[in-house]
Length: 109
Image (cartoon, rainbow, N blue to C red; front, side, top):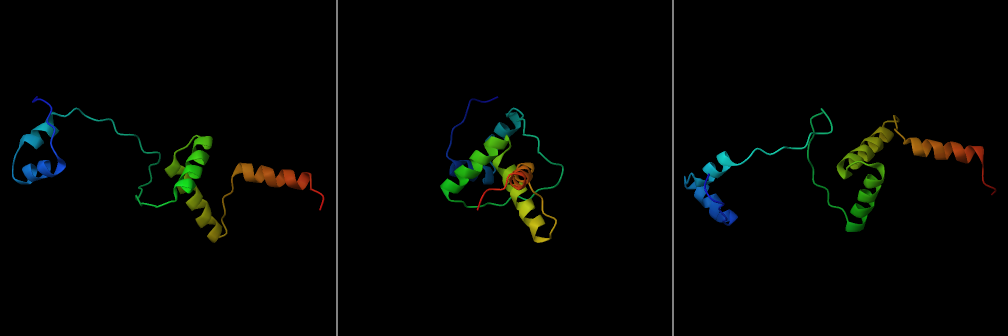
């Protein structure tokens, strides 16, 4: 294997498209990378969402509190919102418990 090569991305692109095989050699000689296992067998589509920083931090904190990833939580929220549109709403167990508790102990008006 050749020594480590450091080059600017544009230079690497020019060399690759110019037929220089040094980059291909580096790729061929690179160690295999373990990729993360997807959390679902369902084919997924990646979309970019721009959020204000404070909103993202709140979502991240909510995901951390649940022990899941931000993307997983956002997907759950989107699925719940869509279910609400067609009257097949999904609610969290915590919300059900809070609703039941409020019925058992109504607050004075």
